[in-house]
Length: 487
Image (tube, rainbow, N blue to C red; front, side, top):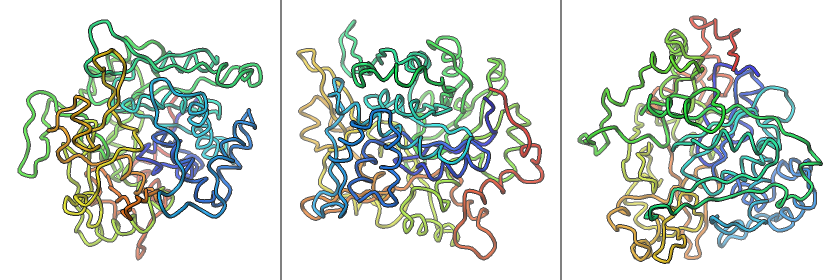
């Protein structure tokens, strides 16, 4: 398979949704859907009446029609969601999910990739977070059933993913080790997926699947080297992300200090040595600020296979971001009044998180103080070991008393935002609480956000994915128009 040199970033909860990925792939580059919380997104889309019929159309192609019909019957509401509480959502993931819960995750991964691949023959990828461990196996398997071409994984050390991809291509039983806080020595916990138990007879029905390429997202030479040498299967290349990229950033290495805005300070220790990376003999794509026009040539000159671009695509017409919210950001960009802050506390994961400072969103401490703390989506919950050896689940964004009762340090809750609810709201799926409160969005972007006005056609107030690609693949980097990378 030949990979284009521009990879569209897999962003947020449904920001990189199927329409954006389909558009980018149709234009000859690699479109990527976000797999984070995609099962919740499926339920929301059905609960809002499935505008355009896209979800139901995709699920008509699922190999087990009766499973798809059950999910549609359970979550679809032709009249739209109830005002109180919004769309019906499934139970939270655990290390021992029910078959029905696993099936929903598989259907969601299948749906998003099917829609992104529909109508063209070009590759499509899916992005997963290693930190969101509990739903990954199901979503990955569903994506593979739909023929996903590339799997990208970040926010962690995805050492076991290559072998899992190999086994799922053969519909074999897989297990994934879970990170369990407070586990005693020798105590190991896993989540598992047995395709033939979840969908009896499916392997015989569909045959062996295409094995997608695996591109882990790394921020250090040490991680890239470890994955290349010790992963349990083939690594096909890397996306190398530096700290100015949007979303979650890896923490700084060494002793952490903060600037006068309270942001973590990155140093030379956080730079990736590209010569050492090239010595691994695998293709790599540079990410974080490489969406600026002209930087593609710089990346190619450094030996990169290309670039991954996130922020410019997040604010284009085809993005999954709620349109009015997206336009508000663009207006502030054009006025020169936009700011991105690297918040060391916002994410329950403990990783720094890029937050766009925007009035009326969860970036404003005065606004989010009105929110009653609750964790009812649970995508980023931490798994911990109880005294009896069983597993528990906690989140630094849940009520402080509940978090403390589960053994969490109350100090960890300070400044934490419920990313699950806020990022869902950013994509147009806000939760409506019984007390009338509507969850606020939280907007993220890389440090290059103030510069995305360069993608606006003259006199325009918005731009398309095609505008982004035209600007990146400029005449000075015209080699990019015809160059492809064998991977």
